[in-house]
Image 1 (tube, rainbow, N blue to C red):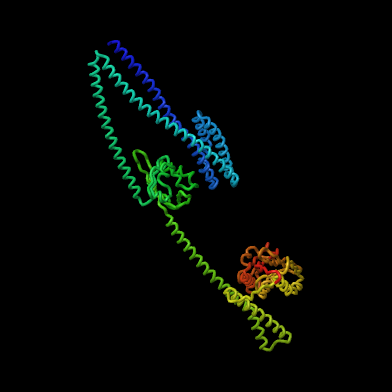
Image 2: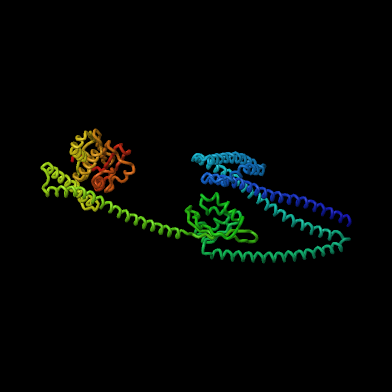
Length: 610
């Protein structure tokens, strides 16, 4: 019996030793797996430090480039001292991963290159030189490369994280199984000892009873703890359901975000507002709801809020926008409220779509602008009327005064024969001036109100041009002005009123001759351009000032300070060309450099043989 007892104890000891060795290895694997997970978190944190340092440096540099305020250089100076150590930390943490080591080397080179480009931007700002677009583009491209490299390294670490977490879970499961095995072995040793060792039956029974009592006590403690845990779990689930119902009942979109910036809870109004399902949002960075242009700076603002969480309203005095799943943006107002759940601080965001409010504000703005334009138009009309009346009264008064003066002198009968002839000539000349003024006014009134008719027919525009030039040839010869006509081909048919078109061409040619000094040049060019005929009157005269060019065809406009007449000639020409479905334009290099007036009219394709 003693031999059997010794053998039993020996076998039990060997079994315990074997189980202990296996247990040690299992626990060691679990510990190593957990350390791997911790190590991955350290690498991700180091990568985040590099990105944050670079983004802060870039943002500060751009802020300095815009404002020239030295406080914006603090992130850049910080990056100069901290960037190398941050990249070195990444390299040290990934020393066991050849792929990450290669990327760490590339990251060191890329961050150094980006920092040098930022240094160039800072130097340009300090020397008060503009930061060139090329430098901005190179810096942006370099920064994008840094982000891409950091993203690759993060993805690699996240993949490792998934694998290491799975290993840790498996190791934990194996550890639990080992503990159950040890308990089973312990009970097995007790049973074997009880059966094989006769002498210690009483002691073993007592020990067994003691152990059983302890097991019962421990079991009771565990059952009590389990009951408490189940109660706490039910209360927590009830509180969570109640919280979820409150969130769902909220009149606005609600989004809860944890310290890592991940969405943990949304309500139905959030799904409706942004177009995502809650399964698509939960677990994603909250930046998916932030427009692309704000995503780089948003994590820093989020971190600042978690550093000093307090109830806060956002959007007052500035525009905030969210982005939907389809990429469209919506104006929003946001209220932030920190909440503590089981020791973890979450930020609950209340998001309100203010599209209708913005739209209403834009209706109000447009109405105000429309009212302002109406007032301005009315004021301009009043001013134009006043200018018109003053202009007409002045232009009519001058010849009327001359007529009345000479008539009175003739009536008195004190004029010599020579002065009588002069008086008659003056009366005749001023009568013609009055007639021309009245005819221009009547003509402009008919054209602007549409109370006129065109005797339109198919005609050869080249013949009309030649007739107009022949009528004005004596006036040109009197000033020794050379008139040249250049016609591409003829005939060119248009649908128009020949009298009105002669009026247009006569006005343009007479103006060219009038404002061209003696021995100058006037050219007429007729070209077929696509479906139009283009008639250009080019002179080498006094030209038109650039500030007056936009007003050439406006009624009552005259470029020369000492000009006479109402300034209606070119306005009438403009209306006549428009009535023929055509266009007129003017070009002048400036005062003293001549001018070019161009009329474009639609061509009529006449069938062959007609």
